[in-house]
Image (cartoon, rainbow, N blue to C red; front, side):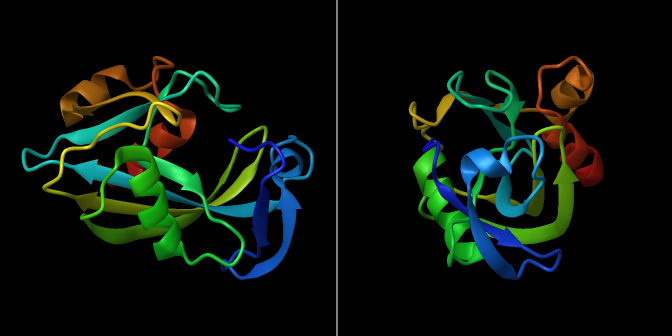
Length: 164
């Protein structure tokens, strides 16, 4: 995480209109809309891979979250960001993916334009310890049993409810 990293600022259609520092986008006041990618990685059994956010993260450290999640860089395409983040976080180069939806997520600290994908891979995910504390496949039932217990990020719970 780079505190002064620049994020693209976009309109509700995803068109880049300017750039701003991460600290400004996450300050809870500006609510500048910035784009992110999320990947929900499933195995052949239909289990969903989740990552446990590193304790160094500024938002929801230590909570379980989408398989992959990250900010799009200025000038970067959604697909480029998805491939970069998946390689950085899980070490996966070969995976299949499908855009499921695009929506705006607003939390007390930020406002994001989320590009949410589902996908799968024959490769075994290997977590990057600089990005993620842990990762594993969860059954859908296991996730359902833990919704609302402050184990997952609020954004993951929202997306999960849209998926099932």
